[in-house]
Image (tube, rainbow, N blue to C red; front, side, top):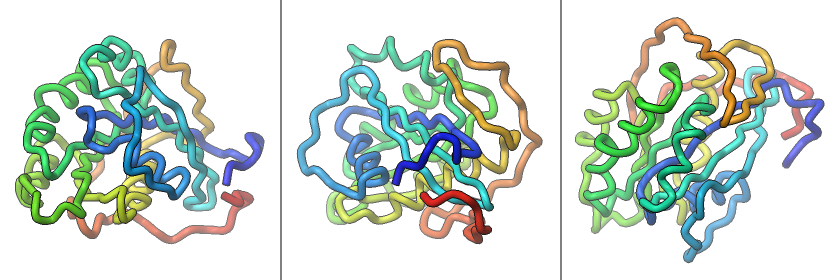
Amino acid sequence: MQIPDENIDLMYNIIVAGDSGVGKSSLIIRFTRNDFRLHTKPTIGVDFSSKDISYDGKCIRGRIWDTAGQERFQAITPSFYRGAHGAMIVFDLSNRSSFEKVEDKWISQLRKYGEPNCIIILVGNKSDLVDQRQISVEEATKFAQKHGAYYMETSALNASNVELAFNTLIQNIYHNKPLHPVVVDPLNPPPTVVPPPVNITFDPTKPTVPTTEQPSKCQC
């Protein structure tokens, strides 16, 4: 449920990136609307959506930027990397090519254009396609550790871990950002605030993130 702007304590910008067809839009639709569409049109440029969550007594709005995975739209993406507090990089567990491009393309772009303290979660989507899996949990987890990222596996089709993946990202942004409202123009972001280093524990099935919520005015 979208709540009035005056009740929002914090606002974080999240960019969702990855090859075309890996299920980025489907994950966002599942998270923001709890819906699934078998056929979605390719994103043209960047689409916007949002979801409000309650965490640690705060009402947090996640503003989600769904980026196009197709080459002809790549010139648009860098400006949104610069304004992102967190990044969800998605690949298709049944498509090795989409995984191999994560490092050379998507993480490379994020490191080049994004904030140095941007929180990253690597997501292997389409976990429901068990018989078509081409990337093991061990391989993807090791890759995520190499790049200082969290790793989770999701299915937009059956909703497995979708909410958990987005909430994990938002909660870890919260623990690494100053506690004041943040509204960012992606074309003119404010100076970066570098947080203290944190220890990260990786487990794609049971991520170690706080789950206890305190009462707040947020009714999201």
